[in-house]
Image (cartoon, rainbow, N blue to C red; front, top):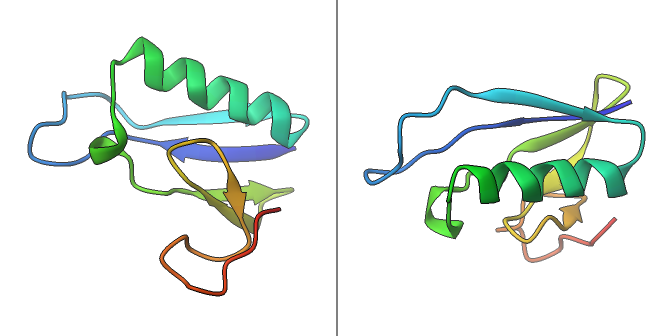
Length: 81
């Protein structure tokens, strides 16, 4: 099971409760995140690159465009998973 805790942040972010999204595979998780961002009208400036868990262990980090990386996206050595 893959999980990601999504939340809006930033000075202009709407007040949205953090939410944990779960899916059986990364593709479905990406779709859930995309739908969540659209539903709340959030842009990249409101995104925090959350940790993606696989079976409750750190799997990677998700960027705003729903790509999953092995390291935080600010790490020059990050590779897409």
